[in-house]
Amino acid sequence: MRKHASLHRWDADVAAYLCSRRALGRRCAADERILGKLRAFLAQAGAHDLDRPHFDAWLRQFGHCAPNTRIDYGLLVQRFCRYRRRIDPMCYVPDRLSLGSRRPYPLPSPIEPQHVAALLEYLDGLPRVAPLTLRLPALRLAIVLLFTTGIRRGEAARLTLGDVAAAAGVLRIRASKFHKSRWVPLSTSTTAELRTYLAERHAVDPHAAAADRLLCSRAGQPYSPETLSGAVKNVMARSGVWANALRLPRVHDFRHGFAVAALRRWYEAEADVQSHLPHLALYMGHVSIDSTAYYLRFMPAVVALASDRFARACGDIIDRGAP
Image (cartoon, rainbow, N blue to C red; front, side, top):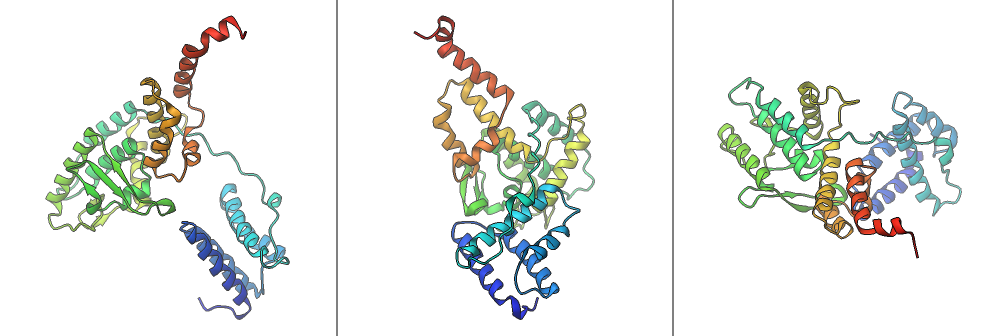
């Protein structure tokens, strides 16, 4: 798009802002996209800069979006304007209260081992529609990886053959969220699933290179994060595993399920849970345990185990009372 002459200061401030954010390890794809939309709106309106009438008019364009989405867009612009305010005290900054309050996101739906077992059994019962398709094996491996490693859907979709060390049972996650790369060790059963899939993939595409994607619907047709998520959710809906549940779990709930399962194992093994949380944060690719805590909100199964441990350790004090 040709730059509007009157927005040269806006363009310079956006460039400096994105540079500062990326220096902190942020990808800034959303910032660049939303600020680009706002710039196009200002250019079309013939505005020299952002003010309240133009901001309100721009935000009204997203009336069809979910309330939280509109608030996210407004907060993103507000964050940029606060950055500008450090240099220009006259810069307009949207009022946070005018953006409204976020609606709470629904709590994750529990995904238990028996759910995953039933889901895999359903996949195994589906017929292969073509001899060269990898769709069912890829979806089976994707579900196993999501549940047993807690990797993000985008991380699973972006895995290449070169990122897989099947002999050692390790995955390499390259420059994911916050530009963090990490090694993810696999369990024995997950490693066996990976080797089975690699054998099928080699039979379909024996000349695949290390840079080719791991998860493909067929040779040369890799899954994107969006198509992989849609395919997994479609299988979850059709399987009937959650037919009696209040709602179908999200694909992201596999990541919640992994975190909850880790805590449950530690409590059952009488391990020091607090000292293990940094390990969980590192495995899941978080910058700190604060990010991991998002996945560890109220969980009845874990709360019951924690209560039992507390009762065993301090129950006698409560029974007899403090001295």
